[in-house]
Length: 276
Image (tube, rainbow, N blue to C red; front, side):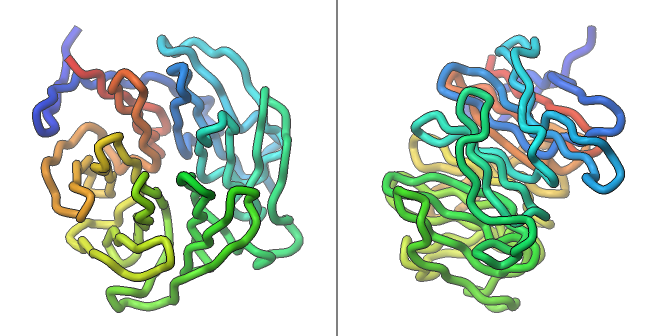
């Protein structure tokens, strides 16, 4: 078998694809790895033309399916595993967040028939030490800050091209220090805000960035449509880049052992980068 390798800073990775590929009618939207190394894959179909599917597929580290759930999801977009183990699905065009525990729906925030109360086509959710942040999404150029009970705390952002404005808030991550990193896809940028919404830094040399996740040392992994995977410092300085996929990864996650998982929309699959 032939192999491909990429290098990101001091680490060389073996490219493995597909780690997972769905049925032809389904599209991979996001991926997240839990503390035990299980890989949770989020799948999307058109809810008005296809029957319901289990939106979440859980795989073991070798790619073998363990369980499937989430038939309630209408328009899957983002997937995040909270520090307490809850699995959160961002149901974009249903304007809601869904929390799953043990494969069962535990909580829903927002309603499909009430856009804007509080979310309007949200795209992603991330968890910090004292709550969560939600990417406003496709029809809401803002970031929602929630407290530890997932109740609204504050909201910041406005539509526009200015450095402190947002357009298509596609992904979000909060650092242990409290900084909020926002993937501003239509402005080709990633932006760093304080917990209260003050703009701290901007890097606007991407082409349609897609996803972001953080590492224990505060550095970031950012995907874009070029397609590249970029390692960035906490103050948004690019440290290294590689081209691990054929199309821009829509989601990115890192396992406890250092393997990086990438959710690709076209062709629809999950690829992974294994450190060697």
